[in-house]
Image (cartoon, rainbow, N blue to C red; front, side, top):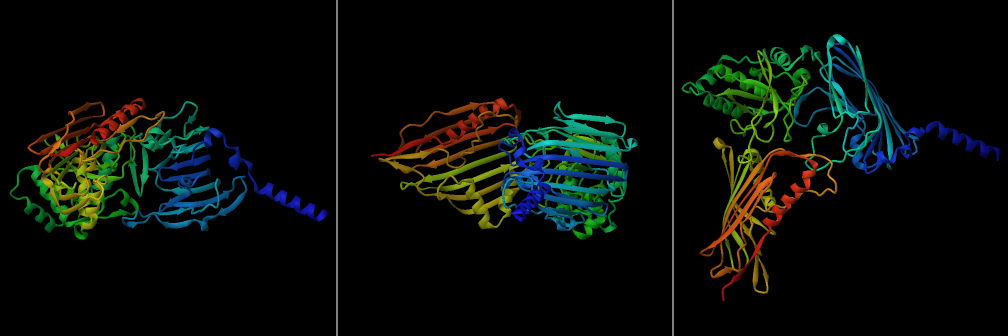
Length: 632
């Protein structure tokens, strides 16, 4: 009996020793774990910037994961390269009761290239935790310490790091050399967050932060979540000392340190460029010829080697190799244009289908992409140099309508790129169809797409023929059994218009109900995407790009068939868009005309119901039917 008691006491003491009750999910407040994927228990960051070329980052992050979707919130990883070194990395796994169940040390982390899948050169590596849980919830305590000679990128304080994830406690401090000019920018920081600042030191402390739920068309993550960004006026980046007092000085540094020695071309290349434009005087036409020359002899690859993440490959090397990344290709085009007397500027931008600006009020190293601009007639021609297919001056969908940094010899300048209005973002559908007495709808269809919609149809054409036909079928997925034939594509680059033609066939398009045939008026562009309903919308929402759909479809009815009654024309005007549709019947031919305009804009949460109601009305109008009847 004494032996059994001794064993039980030993097991109990071992359990108590291995258990950290603070890490048990049972001690998380209900308000923080309601409908969440994860809860950050503690997020502690210490940063020390001893000099312009010396930064140390220490982080301790403890997170409890409740669902499979929360696995992506763990963030137990660290990047390193030739100038950034991981000194310590460690992770401990605890079960629901706070009992340690697994321990990962340095050698247990996956060590891999940080290549993005399209980079042919990339010297950045990553160590990350790969853990498959046996049950939920569980807790991960991750610690990491690293040093870096780069001080151009200082981690931000972000207490909430994902949707459907809440935080119990967050602490961040930064100790720095005051002569470097640390600056910070606060966004959406609650009043209960404590910020302490003295010379050479700043700390941020926060208590509970309740999870935010993702809402359709809601703001970008950092436009919604509390965060503080940090930057140095005097920084170091991969062997280069930089100055970011303002955008002008940062732009001049980029020009002098990153671009100035990269524009030399061999004499024979210069001669070729000049020969291409020898009889051309118009600046725009010269630029177009050189741009298309660049497109025809280069291809895009991603290169992320050291300062190669920011410094372009020399123009002569891009010409010799026939490839480059966004920086190299933009800079190569700039060098060619310069040799034929066309001034242009290198541009740093956030490239994404979602709109994201270079922040005018916070000079610092920003952006993830490079393009080119040619000043022309008090405006700019914007050039995307990574595409072999993009029409000259066409940037819709990836770098349009946002603040960017133009780099020049005299300094940097924030400028807004081209806005593609709703009328330009066009899908124009024309149909010439016949309805047979057995219910088949067939005929010719043409879809012309422009603006931000040009790329969608261009991508369809770029796929294999069988895939492109399947992708086109998806546009008419509401038509059961739709078949396409004689598919052809026409790329009208001068107007950035992409045309798709096909013959379409739909069996049993009409429904026979007691000798009367039900016919849906909108055959070729039916709106069905009514957004999600919210009982109480919390977030504002935005429509980033306006767009226009125009449709004119003619349908020849079987001989002798008539419509019992035609509906009246519909017209709707709202802050979110306009809709007009009408149908006429003349000499046995139904003509259906429709215009749907969706407007760009930012709207309050209270307007979401009205917005959804408008789209519901559009879907209802697009689903209108009439009754056809053969004559006796």
